[in-house]
Image 1 (spheres, rainbow, N blue to C red):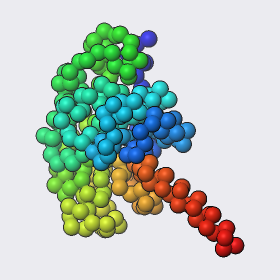
Image 2 (cartoon, helix red, strand yellow; image 1 turned 90 degrees about the vertical axis):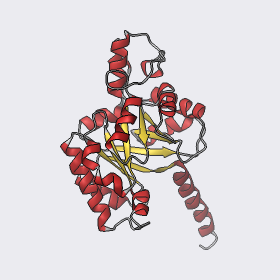
Image 3 (cartoon, one colour; image 1 turned 135 degrees about the vertical axis):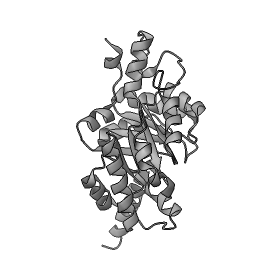
Length: 266
């Protein structure tokens, strides 16, 4: 077996076929079962949100390992775009980083440097990676395979990011731009106005920049607006962040409680 056969990223494979990727966000669940549940439900990708939760580094690694074992791509949104966080979640089993709040090409390049082994970056070698099933391969072969499989997803969450969309999308090593609509709207003084023309403009500009440089666009922050997300997919976006485990659980609980209360009214 070669290193490139040992490590797979189903998200990169689907994007290469121009297919749409379904993702869910983990903020609540601390058990490894969530990886199998996500796979059974039909998701292609999970991302563990260390930025907006108290999930530990250890639990993040355990969920990543479980995801790798069932064939779903585990990503991690780090709480800070620093090598210490990025290195450790990648060594723990993540197949990519979601980097929040990117505003410039220089910031994007720093993330790529932390994610990729040389010559593409400056990631330190720790050996015995779970992505390679802990197999031993020649270093150059292993590093190249892991670099190819590992994604860099940068988030646009501000008006400033849009101003630099083309140069950020041009950064070698960036795979996808995920638009965080809620924070972006807040930065524009338009909080909650998901159907504002500036949202459509943001997607149009970002999709055009990503197409120009062979990158992809993800839809975030529209879990309650599936029709709007579908419009952006039609425009060319290729990943949808569908919501969090908290949202999914609460929605199912609310529906079940309503069913029981409605029985008494029949």
